Picture 1 (cartoon, helix red, strand yellow):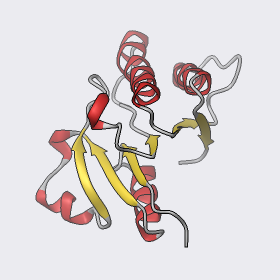
Picture 2 (tube, helix red, strand yellow):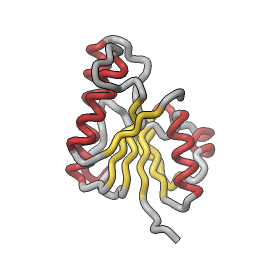
Picture 3 (cartoon, rainbow, N blue to C red):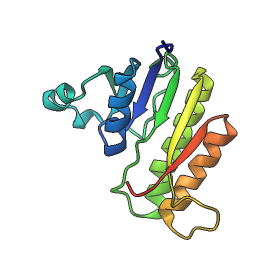
Length: 152
């Protein structure tokens, strides 16, 4: 039997987060779901089968310290897709993601995984890909890993 881990997932009520949440719970791991406070209702909380705890999360104000230091793994999948201007994308998504990744490293989270995109590659002209690539670089520089999902 494998060792149970405490796995934190940002964006836990999104498409990818929902699948990750269920998979880790089915494998017997303790899932901590980080979700936007205004997105948690009694119905959505009930739908989060297998979640040991939900914690409020806003990409603009990433958690630090005791809010994440109890995690073995942090999977960062949250991303605000409503932002379209370069200033907003970099000021919110990139800045917030990079701060969360640094906070996780400072808090001693053993494994940090950044959910990226196949749009993130050297030389891309897409704002989304450039932003994800910047976050990948931060994750990698701190000892984390990135995974580039496609067709999600």
